Each structure stands twice: as C-alpha cells, then as structure tokens.
Image (cartoon, rainbow, N blue to C red; front, top):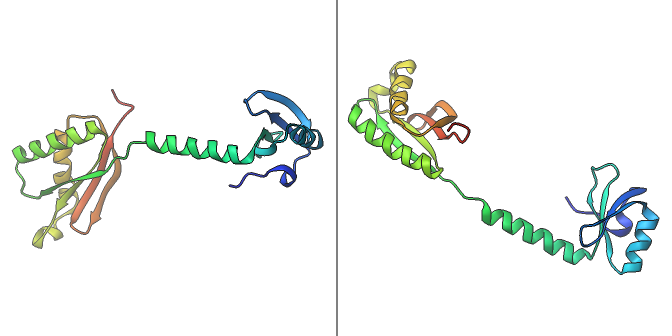
Length: 171
C-alpha cells in the first residue's frame, strides 16, 4: 500500500501528528496542509482506515527511511525455522523409534517443524490406511516435547506423512 502525500490525501478531516510523534489534534485538510507548508515538510497519510485518518507532518524521504529501518529490524528479529524430516518404515523397531523420537524432541526444542514420514515400498503401499496411521503415531508416543500437529496424516510421494511443531501454549 502506497501512502498518500500532500494533495493526494482525500479526507476532509485528519488527526495530525508532528515529526516527534506528538499529537497536534484533529484538523481540517486545509489547516493541516497549511501547517505542513509552514513547517516546510510533507503531510503523509499513515493510516487511511482510522476515523478520522491519521496524517504525519514529516519529510516524505525521512518517513520512507524510517519505514525501511523498521522492516529491516523486524526481519532480523524473526528466527527462521526449517522443516526437518524423520523417516521410518513399517517394520522399524521400538528402540529405533525411540532414538528417532529423541532426535525429534531435540529439534522441537530448537523450534523446528518436523515431518515424520512412513516410507512405503512394494506391498506396504497397499496396506490398510488405519494400520499405517497407527504405525506413524507410534513415533509420536515417544516424543518428549509438547507438540501440536501442524498438518495431519496425508499421503506423500514416499508414503504417509505427518508434520508436527512445538506447542508454545503447553508448559
């Protein structure tokens, strides 16, 4: 969304804020425009949905610079989590499942999503769907971290898969 500046603003009445963030008050468009010209700055509409719309008395270039800096700071603060994969087969033993679940728990603690895949080949592709889901759920019983199901059981190119992620609400 592009902000409207100066004469592009269509509102008849605006809530005006100065460059320091202090509220000037509710002014008519003409009064706000005159104040902007008097101070030698632009009138930038920063929130058109508010009643009345909010406009700021600031140089447009400086405003764009501030917005760019806010966006960069938000991006740098966001931690990227990747989806890790664990693959099991129909005949995988309980001890092996415990080891894979231990790894999954560690990854969940780090904040990653985990895709647990039941690898099917040959005749196992034609097995009963409920039996295959139960085999896939066996791994989840061994996971020690609190998790929630992000994507329920579904067929994948390799067989059957489920995606889990850490449940932040449960502690």
